[in-house]
Length: 139
Image 1: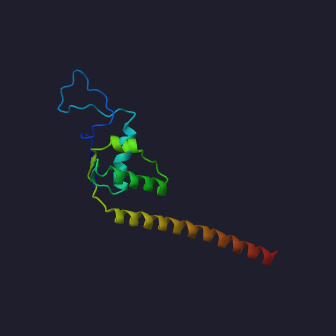
Image 2: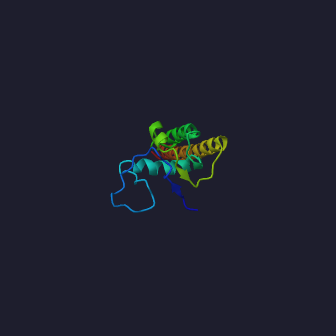
Image 3: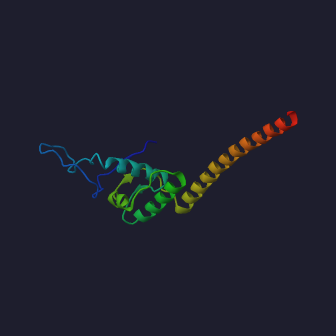
């Protein structure tokens, strides 16, 4: 399933004015080039943190908290409270995930990554130990 999104209800994002000769149905201008990276980042972050359907004034705090945790755990770009506030009204076709399920998923994922890193480090150390033992026995 492709990711769909709608920013027409995001009243606080910076937009370019509509051209004077514009005759289309939309009555709002396009997002400014400077702000588009924030829009794009927020769309994908909604998916990453399992905050489905719509970013609202009621759930923006939870979105920010999950986003902050996600950024800290993954090293990804953080999102500011101001950016969250500006993006209220964003709609995405992401199924919502409960806070408990999301936290469990993030910790499980982090444990798997840490486990793989540990296993790689142990393999490297054990190989170095083996080479050192071989050098002592043959030297």
